[in-house]
Length: 291
Image 1: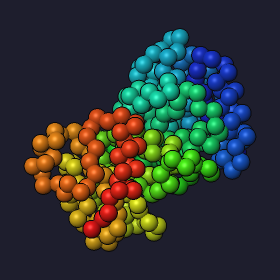
Image 2 (image 1 turned 60 degrees about the horizontal axis):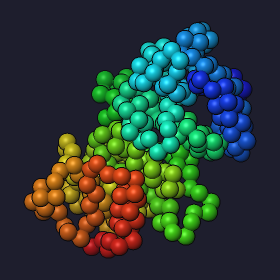
Image 3 (image 1 turned 90 degrees about the vertical axis):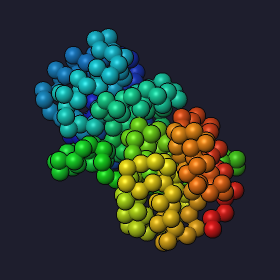
């Protein structure tokens, strides 16, 4: 990545752009280690300083002196329709991150995250999602329909996970809600897992067929347009008989029971906490024995 590559950081604290620049520059192998970091403390200044040129990525707070909340994201999106947007949110505030994604952002970072590899991966993920959004829009599809496999670099595996953590695995995630996929990918990626994302059942089957490596776990919503969760499992196990399964649903336990779900399969009820997701994934991977 050449020095002409520009990343715009919009934040009221001048220390934040310096921190991001230093972290990226110190990250070996980062595609953005030589990027020019431009900064602005207000939305008005950010919109004026670029002269209409699209940055490679925009990292922004939504709490600025002249703009707050999702209005900030929408203003940036209008001015820079082709630039991927990454929003800085408070630590563990996945709800604000999901809200940002629903309003035009491609990814979110916790405000205290200072590791260059995490920032680099967030930019890569945002760029890929922006590319997919535009390719689908060009095909006259509704934005967000389709499937993407995030490259392994987008979900780095820690070099030394703690002994209490489940070993890093490859997980196929199927859910038709972008915000749900984004949150789960964020949480599992931080735990070291590689996440392959699909929006619907057919996309998941195509993704599994094209992926050469092992897929350890399928996490799927039970009720989606097209193939339902159990149907995805049935068809996927024809080619990957050893895959573990974790179902998700916002329906009641009684509704799930009436669906005929195998009681031996793991189940996670929406909405869930980070701890509940982590424990459900570990349980599905370590306790469940596929037929």
